[in-house]
View 1 (cartoon, rainbow, N blue to C red):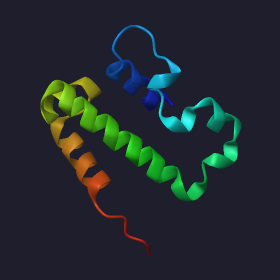
View 2 (tube, one colour; view 1 turned 60 degrees about the horizontal axis):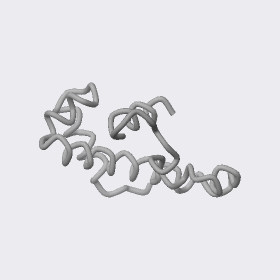
View 3 (tube, rainbow, N blue to C red; view 1 turned 30 degrees about the vertical axis):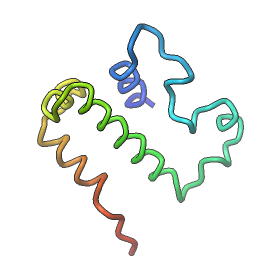
Amino acid sequence: MENLIKRLVTMTEGDIIEEKHLPSIFSRGDILRTDSIKKENYKEIINTFELKTINELIKKYGSQRKAAKVMGISQSTLSRKLKNLLSPIIVH
């Protein structure tokens, strides 16, 4: 939740974070239905949100280096994170 708030503060223009800024899994209907987030897709939901957020930051700031700075991490950490998010999931 802390990471979500940090991202929303960074990504949201203006001073107010509204419901429309939240990922769809936090819409009022889904919050009331806790069964809407199943163990099988929780990680996928988080990864998708994280990848979308990173891509939006890179687009907004024009480079991985600048996006990483806004996120408070190094460019190499951001690059590794992207590689991990984009690599195929290996099922054992």
